Length: 145
Image (tube, rainbow, N blue to C red; front, side, top):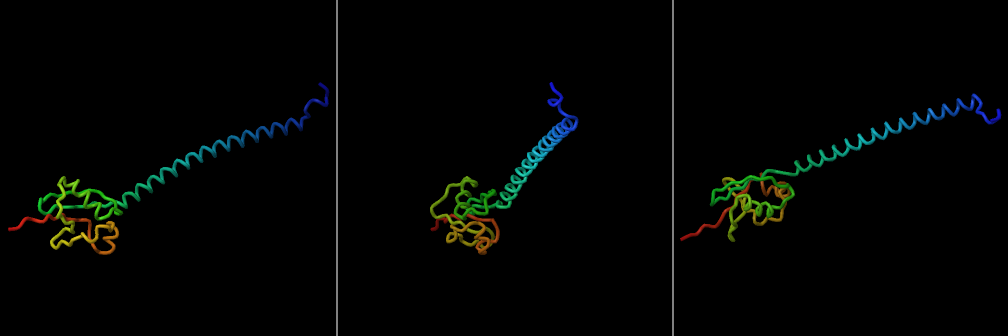
């Protein structure tokens, strides 16, 4: 090797510094990627929490009583379910067979027929003051003399 082929002291120091800077930059990048992964995980968890909260917010407890059978049931339902869907599900929850002349109505001392409103969602029915709460009744026509 000639004297010209050997790195000069200054060149050797510059290369060493550059390699050291490269190592530090790679280490910093690795830390940043780790933090990015942790942040992405936290974001996914937060999105799931938001979805659960929205799901819970969109759910209500429905109470239904079959007036003639004196059977009661309570179940969770989406605020976006129609009164028809709630009525249909009520039979399953009550374990009672639907009769052709059954009527879906509000519950309470002065029930109001909901037969004209079956296409409304629970939210719409509440907002339009068709229902005051999520308590319903099913009445069957009784036989007469």
